[in-house]
Picture 1 (tube, rainbow, N blue to C red):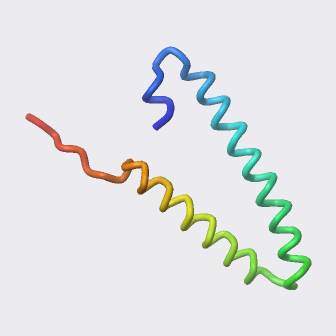
Picture 2: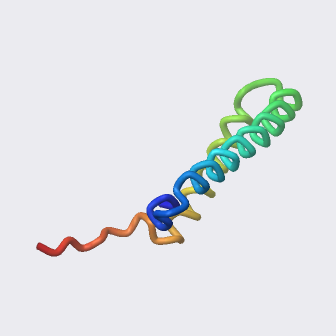
Length: 73
């Protein structure tokens, strides 16, 4: 979605989205390690993943990206 908005800065947007993704993976690894250590299993990690994915879906749906676009012929 970001790359389609700016045609002349696609590589910059791609690099920025990759950096944000790897930052998120780093934070998730830290939080996952803490959860795994505190709760002795994967149940807390799966709950954390469920909550984070739910927040992501709510943010995306709030932006209107899931709305159907009309196609005119």
